[in-house]
Length: 382
Image 1 (cartoon, helix red, strand yellow):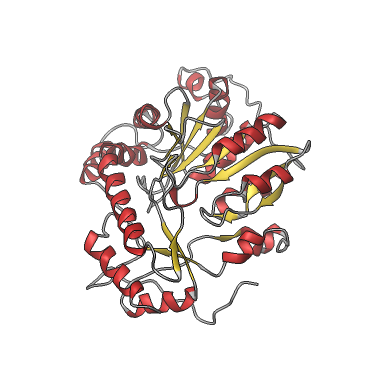
Image 2 (tube, rainbow, N blue to C red):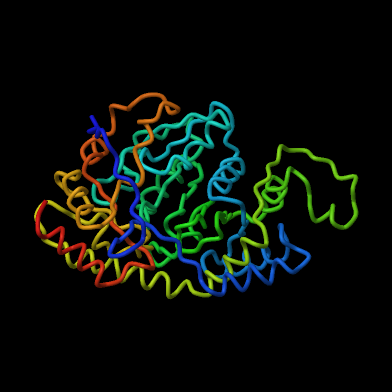
């Protein structure tokens, strides 16, 4: 059973020698782009959204169809609709993820079957997935936790055997690769996040990449109330609405920020990977702690999070805070929340580490010296 604490630690302010857990990165070009966009005719969904989609796909999803939306949650919901998931359908999902992965199934009345995690990656465990999938399963959803890709080969075997799609929640995995393939250009559907503290931010926003190009027109309609915008803008007002749509579009203001982020993406991911590598090097062999997802050679980490498994995790978190270093558990097992029913009893790997994982600072404002300072505190014991 998860340990409970009577008092949570509040957020640190990014002042003095404090090292905060998260901090957004806004390129200077983003400010210029937004200012320019605000003086144009288009500040809602317009040509900048189209351009952002094109440039994103060229970089991360060649041969796939991109759709920019208002959030990764929007993208996930759209993917679930396009995968034809309906009321009472069953879907195998990770128990350990942001709740945004699984909450859209409540919109739809679908039933989730929680799969356990791999202790070394905290990603969905294909061994458990194989046990859960049956003739009632409509899709498999996987999350690349922290930016480290899941075992896509094993998940693909299971999905192909049952003839069902894989939906990748890659909110944390922009720039990651698996077997030299870009995340975003592998499965039937992949979703990305541009929320405030992601690699690229648009304030909030998301992207869906679709393998089957024939689904793109439907996706565009559902993104905009079920309306065929291209026909409407040509002056054809007699268009029928045949499916329930949503207000899931991205704006040109947001896309302007995204375009600037794409220009600096190489710098962003290079810095993040360098910081994560220092954590891995400095903490290798340190008693009582292990970096999650280290030393994988068949996949390339996007380095959004540095998560460690630590004995006496709460004591380590307090020790770091005493030294002005913020850390925390960022995501939680979803079956702890009332909306998902009750705690499952078939998730031993999740049970074993739910009180032991801790996220350490990793973002553009964390320097090499900062990481070495953090690791020095850890190595001094807790």
